[in-house]
Length: 61
Image (tube, rainbow, N blue to C red):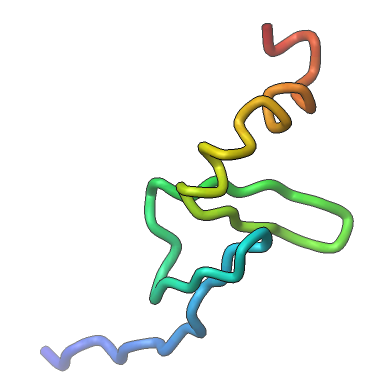
């Protein structure tokens, strides 16, 4: 059995501060926008939590 080929992915970048990571950590947030998926690092997510909660639909609460 041959090993599976590895796929090289570009690093991910936080859309707020520009921090990068080799792959999207589980602690990062993501949102789907008309321009595509945006990733936000855990530090920026914590700093902007109120803004993120304010964008949720009423049904969420």
